Length: 155
Image 1: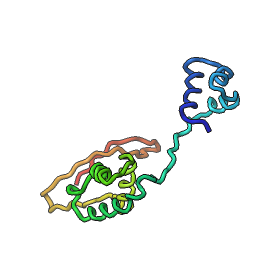
Image 2 (image 1 turned 30 degrees about the vertical axis):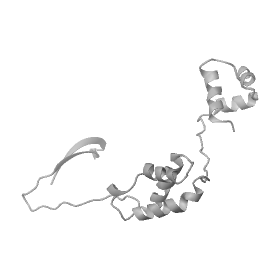
Image 3 (image 1 turned 45 degrees about the vertical axis):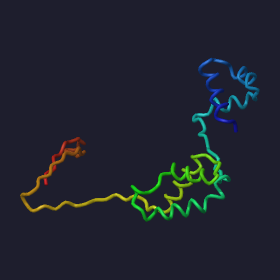
Image 4 (image 1 turned 120 degrees about the vertical axis):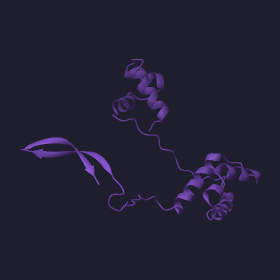
């Protein structure tokens, strides 16, 4: 499979610059069948990022996990950010990049945090103390004809 840059170059040369498939194949040193294949695709293939295991982070993972476990007990406002963790690792000699650390922290935190759930709190008031009003649009069948009606809801 070709890289995304080459696929986009093929499509641009054909659609924007009006070159023939043969000329594109000559210019990019590709087979005419390859050029035709990528021009006939309905969807442009998505770029798939290859997952790496962050070899530079390896020796520091245990230390980072230990620090993250200590922080789980603290309130969110007192926890360190991923940038602070990255700066700490750099002070220990870490030579990797920030995205490597932030991805690891994000995966680690998501494995421990429960998924968010929808919350519904029923409101009950004594009679006459509260008034609620809402509109909705509903489809109803009147005399065999489907009609859209606006309905007022009172509570």
